[in-house]
Length: 346
Length: 165
Image (cartoon, rainbow over all chains, first blue to last red; front, side, top):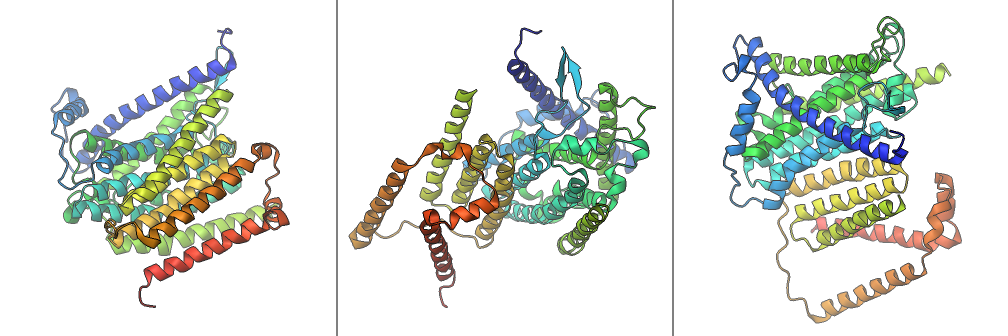
């Protein structure tokens, strides 16, 4: 293997990592559609999809095939270019955001160190913030391009909501960044190593964690913040007019965003791949680290589904009130207190 | 490696220039807004290529993420229509416009011809240093001219938005 130069190794490793990551994201996406429907059904004393294959496990496959063969409909008067570009934009933004997060401890392969991460960027947290702010455009464009009132209203609502909650989302990261003293994801994760969860930002930055979770739920438009898709008043919001695979793409972007948000939460607040009990459980072993990471992300994804099965939807004015008058002041206060404590301790 | 960087740069720069052309020739305001977003993103990628990921991220957060969302909001909420084809392009107005275009082109060309490309490589770009440079005799004229230009744009925007003052 020593015949490969460093550059070649890096190139091959990156391509493989990108392929594996995108492939597993697609797999998790289709799995999530099944899990979400089943779990929701059990919460509501129903059975959910259980006819296709054992326990209905082949339901995502059936859905995929169905969507492939559906007729593509584009409304009259729609802007064709924007109508086609919008779902792509959503998916690309969703996939790009997840590129800088680490999934496990570095391990060595063929005598070289390999990061379980596509890019170890200096300004990782800022990069994610930038890319998620681009995700809004997919929604706006989809709502506007379809030339339909429901879509436009849904798109406007959606962008207003994302815009409002992005602020508190970003502000909830500031405390974490100040504690770690770095924008780099790996530094933030490493800073949370140590005994009995005491370095986890969940403990050190509990208000920020709560703010992050609420704002992130709103950012990915999950219940109770699923107003863009408020079917009672807007049919299906910004993607009312989308059918066939374009509909599937929009769904995919939403699920990938949800995964990104859960992955970020794990890395920023729940200690990433650290177990919180070093010594007993060898977290530096790449496989164990990866397992801890996956369990945390899966638990968060379950909470998202749980919320959907439990909570009613916000009213629009309540949503705006809550975002601007409650979350943002609390987030600002948290930054102030954290900065004060850090300065006080020297 | 250098050729790869060069190729990526030319692709990005080409995208930025093309999108800028689309932006000013586009009749629908939303189309223009999205072309501007493409310009901003390409510029951000070029900053990244120049080894300044922080500026690249800020460029997207501030301009593409925040400012442009506001633009889009205004366009969508005010329901701005596409431009109607204006009155005939000839006459004294058209000639003046043509003359000003030629002047602008000449200015840009003269700057480009005299530009020293090697400046960027070794430049201490701390905020204090940049401010000192800006107010030094070398850049003072350009700096003040830009300020006046922005002021003129502000006044123009108010004059256009408020028809009856």
